[in-house]
Amino acid sequence: MLSFHCTMANWKKTTHEERLAKERQAERLRQQRIKNYLAKYEQKYKEKKNYGKKKDKGNILTVD
Image (cartoon, rainbow, N blue to C red; front, side, top):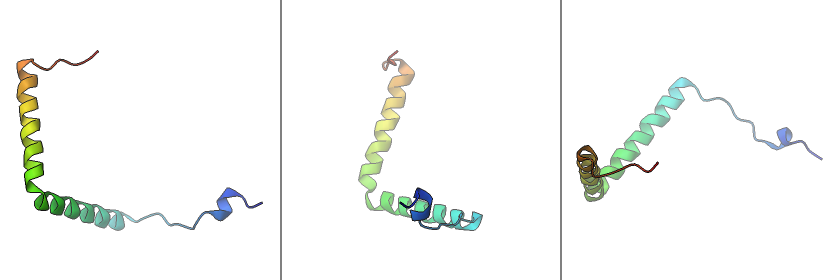
């Protein structure tokens, strides 16, 4: 029977530059998604803003 370590694919640790490139790509995709569905994100922003106002007033209580 083969051990678990023998069946795994070989992988290398990503370099700092590769990780940064991957993060940049993810941020680009996120911004593109926001741009394509602007109305949805504007609605979420308004809901967050309203929630913050209610919380500041004390209308929202946390559950203990």
